[in-house]
Structures are given as structure tokens and as C-alpha cells.
Length: 345
Image 1 (cartoon, rainbow, N blue to C red):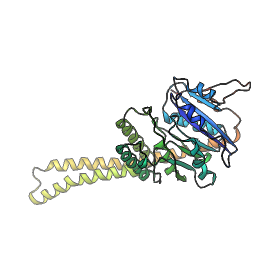
Image 2: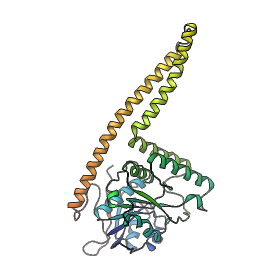
Image 3: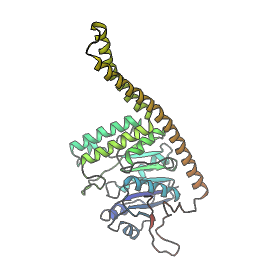
């Protein structure tokens, strides 16, 4: 049993030593514990520092591509390196390395595919009242839309079984937290939460500049993900709502037509007819989107099968060089090296 702890980093040279220092190097039921640092275009020497700290694997994006891209790079690299369990943590030292054995325990027992660390935001003294309310509201919305029971939906401290990791495909460039929960719900993976520690992070977030921007981008990811996985449900609701609104002016026109001939109320008929047409078109769009979503599921299933075949028969080979290079802290001659991930842009 092999566990790899992946750490997406962007200019984390100041905090990375503390993260690596408390990383557990052994755990019950685990034969190997390795660390992978994904340097997302850092300019402060994060990748070189990681190698000096003894990190086994380092990959680097030539330019900053965002947390979601770094996370996906880490997942695919861990799979190619033969990880049975993948742990994702942050490079800002927010999460305690000593919680990793507790995080992976449900997967080792066979009781979960994904484990998400619960920071218990409502009890964190360094969270403001406003932040606690936003965390509670946001997690409640994600739980409802994803049909999961995840109390802390934006926690980045997570563990994935190999089978679960093979099914992840991110399309947004902002963050992995919300979209992976939506995918977990869509694929009906077994997900549990365990309580963890969460330290105060003194520096400003590098993921967003302010709270309104975070809310806007998170809402965009949530709406897009829900529309991607449940388009018929979303567009049917919108279409029926527009249709119901359109019936009001039509009923008004019919009433006046029956009482006084409808003189002077033709505008109600025009408005109602337009809204009914829009509602009908939205319903048809929902059917088409549902067909497209079904096709997307087939494509993702095919991609998953291809991954399983590739990893099952070519585990000793390097990943596709067009996107990623197999990574190792040392080459055959013991020289440190950093693998670069080439952007598709």
C-alpha cells in the first residue's frame, strides 16, 4: 500500500519547510509514504527548495495555471507513480500533517472512496462571524446540489482512493474543492468527513483577492458544475418558471376578453406568448443539454477505462510528454531534477 501526499504550491517557499517537516513518513497499513510538490509557476524557488527538503517528487508548471490545474496535475502524476491513496494538502501550513493517518483511515478500512477533512468552521476562533456564516451557507448549498453530506465543502485537506482518483476530471480553473464534491455526488462515491485541525493563515490568499471575488468565482463553479451534471433538472425548473410567469398575462387577457372583448389588452397576449415561447425553448434546450450530458458521461467513462488500461499495462513508463513528465527527486545518477509540465496553451 502506497500513499502519496500531494502539495499544490504557488510561492510557498516560506511555509513549505514547516509542511514537509511534520509530514508523517509511516502509517499503520501503509508500506510507503511519499511527497509530491506541484509548483504552479512559482517565482520564489519553491521547486528547488522542495528538493533540498528531501521531497521525492516535484513537478512544475512553467506558468501559473491555477489551483484546479495544479490539483489535476498532482492527481494524474500520483496515479502514474502508483499511489493507492492520494492525500491533498495545502502548502500554506493550514492543515496539520499529524491528521493524515486519521484522514486516510476510512479508506484503508474500505469504508470510503473519498475523505474530506472537516475544519468545523463554526468553532474556529480565527474565523470572523461573517466568514462562519458564509462557510455554513455555502457548504449547505453544495450539500444540497451534490446530494452529499459534506459539512465543510471547501476544505482542501482530502484523501482519495485510487479508484476515486481515476474518475476525477476537472474543467474549471479556479479551485478543485467544489467541483470534486459535485463529481463525487454525481458518481455516487462513498464520501465521509473526519474532524481535523485548521491553523490560522497569516498571509493573504493567493487564490482570490477579496471575499466578493471568492463568492463570485465559487458561485460560477457551483452553477456551472450543477448545470453540467444535472442540466435537465436545472433547465426544466427555469423553463417551467418562465412558462408559469407567461401564463399570468395570458390569463389576464382571457379574462378581459371574456368580460369586455379584450379591447386594449393585446399587450398582455403578446407578452404572455413571448414568455411561453421562451419557456418552451428552455425546456427543449434542457432535453438537448441532457443528451449532451449523457454523451459526456460516456466520454468520461471511456477516459476512465483508458486510464485504467494505461496504468495497468504501462506503470513503468513515463506519462505523455506532451503534458507531463514522470517525476523523481533524483535521477539514476543521484542528481536532483525537476520535471516540468508543459502547458497546452
